[in-house]
Amino acid sequence: MAIHQLPDGRWKVDVEPIKGKRFRKTFKTKGEAQRFESTCRSKVIVDADWSPRPTDARRLTDLVGSWFDLHGHSLRDGERRRSKLDQLARRLGNPRAAKLDPQAYAHDRRVRLGQGVSPKTLNNELGYLRSVYNELRGLGVISYANPLALVKPLKLQERELSWLTTEQIAELLQAIRSGCDNPHVEIIVLICLATGARWSEAEKLKPTGLRNGVITFSGTKSGKVRSVPISAELAAKIVRHWKQHGQPNSAITSFRRALSRTTIKLPKGQAAHALRHTFASHFIQNGGNILTLQKILGHSSLAMTMRYAHLAPDHLQDAIRLGPLSSAATPVG
Image 1: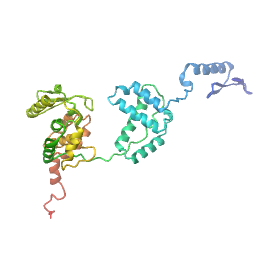
Image 2: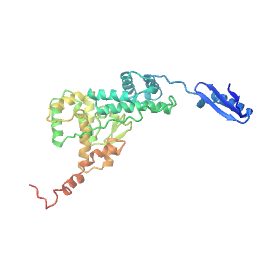
Image 3: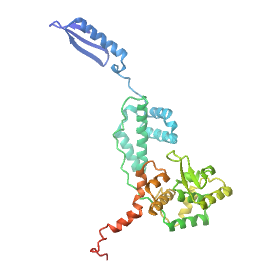
Image 4: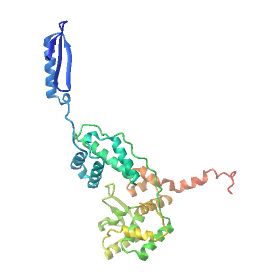
C-alpha cells in the first residue's frame, strides 16, 4: 500500500510511480501524506527530469551521420571527415555511441601507430571524433558527456622546417627549366617563393586574383582571403604564362620529379611546403617583421609564425655575442 499508518500514529508514504523512482516519507497527518503521494505521481508525468531517460542505443555511425547532417555538411572537408569517422567506427566495432570505451579507442590508436600512421593524423582523428560528441551535445541531440573528453592527444615531435638557400633555389629553377614535363611548374614555384603561398593556393590562382601587382588568394586553408604584393616583373611573367599556357593544372608530380633531379634533400612530406618555409625564412633573415609575416602567410595564430622567429638577424647575432665563447678570456682553438 502506498500510504499506511505507523504504530505511533504517523503516516508513511512508500510510493514507486515508475520503476526506478521510489519515494518514502513520514507525515503527521494522512492529508499531508496523500498530498505528497499525489505530488510524486504528477511530477513523474509532468517533469521529464523526474523520469528516467530511455537508453540511447544509437551506434557510433548513427552519431556520425547526425553530425554530418546537422553540421559536417557545412565544412569544406566535411565529406573527408565523415569518411574517416566511419572508418574509425568500423574499426572499433561500431559500438553504442554512449558507451564508447576510451581504452578500446586508445588500443586502436596504438595499433595504427605501430602500422606507421603518423601521430598528427591520429591526433586529427581524435579531434574529429570529439567534435562529433561536443557538437551534438550542444545541439541537444545527445545528453551525455563526451566519452573521449579525458583522452590526451599524442605528443608530437616538432619537425625541423626545411627551407632552401639562394643557391638551392637557383639549382631547383634550373632543373625545372631544363627538363620539366609540365610548363606550369616554374610559375607555380615562383608564386610560392614570392608570396609564401601554399602549393594548392598558387596552383588554383585565377586571372582575377592578380590585379595591380597584388596577388589575392581565396579558398585558402583558413577560409580567409589574403593579398600579397609582387614585383612588376613577376606579375608580367604570370600574365604572359597564362596567355601562352592557360590556367595551371595539377603539377605537383612534375615538381617532385624536377626536385629529384637536384642535390636537394628534404624531409618526407615537405617537398612543396618547403617553398612556403623558404619564403618565411628568407623574409625573417632579411629583417622582416614577424607580425607582417603572420598576415602574409595567413596564420590564425602568431604561435605558428613564431617558428621562424629564431632566424631573425638580431637573434642570430645574439648567439655569437652572448654565447659562452664570446668572452675574450675564452680562446677558440
